[in-house]
Structures are given as structure tokens and as C-alpha cells.
Image (tube, rainbow, N blue to C red; front, side, top):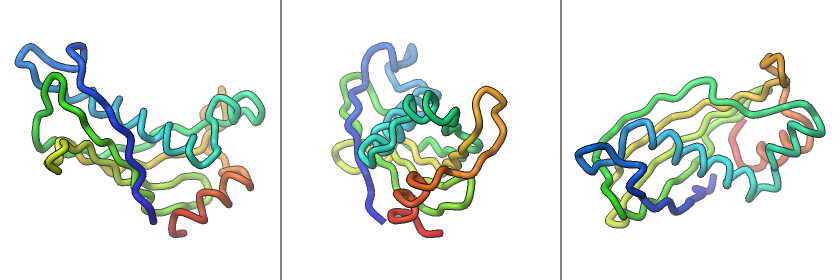
Length: 137
């Protein structure tokens, strides 16, 4: 299993009045990293929706907030595949400062759903094969 990393700069809009990243924004950072991870595998979510009527949605996110990042910090937001099933997969995600301190960590379940019904569907063959090559079953 290979950890994928994506850099995210903390902007003023990401912080609260105290100058610390607002907790919900870590979920946004995790979303960006997941999207870029899928893109790096040749999986384009817009194309999946348009051509197959499917999408990936977060079904569960267990998040721990450990250390507050601040304005102008550069975070490395990572994605580590953990497990793949027929219609979903689990990932571990972290947002870390350059010195290695973990600001937020999450275990995220991503499900494949039909659009617009939002009903669970099996991950399509080619995509399932691509994910299976990187995620334990």
C-alpha cells in the first residue's frame, strides 16, 4: 500500500477567529486529497458521473483533531488505502505539518452510489481492478 500526499496551504478563509484552521475545513482538505488520489489512478469522478451515472460519496468519517494548523502553514494531506469491498473502500487520511505533527487524522469510508438515487452500487470493473491493485480486499 502506498501513501499518496497532496500539499494544501492554509489560507485566511480556512481559519477561525483565533487564527487556527476551523475543524470542518480539515474535511475539505481530505476531500481534495482523495480527489487527487483518484485522479492519480486515472479515475475521474466527473467522467464517472457523466458516463456511468455513478459517484463516490463519504459514507462515514471518523476524525480526530490533534493540533491546530495556522494561517500560511503548508500541510501534507495524505491518503492511505486500507480495505476494498464490493461497493466501498476505507482510507486513512492525515493532515500533517512539515515537521510531521499530525493536525487531523481520519478513517474514511467511501461508497460507490448511483446518481441521482444515491443507492449503493458495485464499483465498476475497471475501477475496481485499479483499486484492488492498491487496496487489500
